[in-house]
Amino acid sequence: MTNRIDDLRVANSFAELPREFHTFLQPQPLESARLLHVNEPVGEMLGLDAAALQSEEFFEIVSGRRPLPGGQTLAAVYSGHQFGVWAGQLGDGRAHLLGEVLTPHGRLELQLKGAGRTPYSRMGDGRAVLRSSVREYLASEAMAGLGIPTTRVLALVTSDEPVYRETIETAAIVTRVSPSFVRFGSFEHWAGKPDHLRTLTDYVIGRHYPELLDSREGEPADWEHTVLAFLREVVRRTAAMVADWQTAGFCHGVMNTDNMSILGLTIDYGPYGFMDRFQANHICNHSDTHGRYAWNVQPAVAHWNLYRLGGVFLGVGLEEEALRDALSGYEQDFLKAFHGNLCRKLGLRQWEEGDADLVDAWWRLLHGQRADFTLAFRRLAGARQDPAPFLELFSAQEDARAWLDRYTLRVQRQNWEEGERSASMLRANPLYVLRNHLAQGAIDAAARGDASEIDTLLTLLRDPYTERPGFEHYAQAAPDWADELQVSCSS
Ligand code: AMP
Ligand code: MG
Image 1 (spheres, helix red, strand yellow):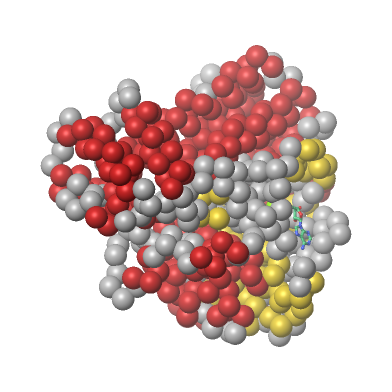
Image 2 (cartoon, helix red, strand yellow):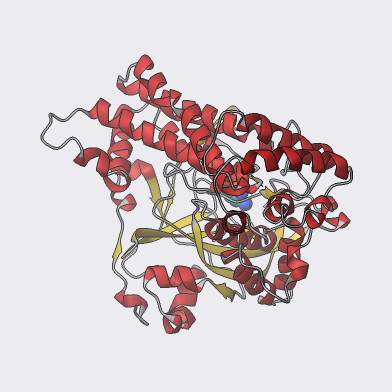
């Protein structure tokens, strides 16, 4: 740990890629910027102690006033498919990569989101509103608390600078932290340029998937073989990530290929949502009128996105058949992760034939009665000792009781002491979840310069499984007005 930012060991591997990959530039700092919140656990990962995080220099870096010492600030180019349609060149329209810090947790890149226009801004203003910045800040840490792979956040800077969306809002800057911000779209960008595609592929494998090279030590270099192994691993990680989303009731909202991390991390939090009342075809993004990214289609969309990524390599001589093979493991990978998650959440020792029917009936029950997703799983943990709190979540309690009877027969067949089983379920089913109305409370307070609600939520969400006296209110189902909170692509 250090109290001096200058002590950080900083490198710039992405900046060393050929110049077509990025543009070097400086951020445009906000007028009247203030440091609203610092995420100490991530500061600690970077090796920065409390004094460093409170320093003027830290504030100047996270507000875009001065570069990271030793870093080369840049915006990266990428392309992508948006809502199923090829959108051509996109890129960091409002993100500035500051450099990478060498830490005991590996190399971590720092990126400012909302620090002004870049050559990739198109019609945008390069800014991010406070509302969406608070939402990204909270969601990253909520996902980390749930153990779901995600980019992280370091700091949140606010200002009085107006930003024009549907209404006038104020601008903010979030500092994000990730081993890499490379997306599927970064590869799609070079679909017709074999040299650059090879360069990017070698860079990503060398830095983030070095084990794929090690395993071939001593054998003749076989680039195509390594790329297929790389794709296979991206498929596996993406499948596992989406399985985690499904069992947390998380909807990403904008699963465009430019929002899919090459490391299988949840990235680019926009109009996401953690479901309150369960609806299988729930759409969290108000702009997604056709439900392309509804909860129940997320697994299929991720597979479609992987096909866009895989297809890029047709241009550098990989066989269609071999690519198809690499992508075909997706369904198995997804089901394995999904069933594993469900076993933990439902207190099943292992997935058995017949469990698919039980789980289908579970989803039908929740969907039919619009029961609260998080509370239904959570209260199921104690339902065999005292079914009342669980049954209360349902309007037609006899249906819930019938399912519970079926479930009881299933769990009685396994050899697992009920107290232990229940405790294990409480460690797999969060009590607290980042509901839209809770995020809204933190946004409203943040707009008054008050970060205490962010603090409270972070405390609960970093360990969402542990019940805390005095915070009952945060563990309740959403109030009716929460249905009217609309989250759209506008951010
Ligand atoms: P998103 O859907 O938020 O991930 O953004 C899609 C693309 O639009 C990315 O290239 C972003 O950088 C860009 N973009 C989104 N909002 C803005 C903005 N306010 N200013 C400039 N570019 C933006
Ligand atoms: Mg994006």
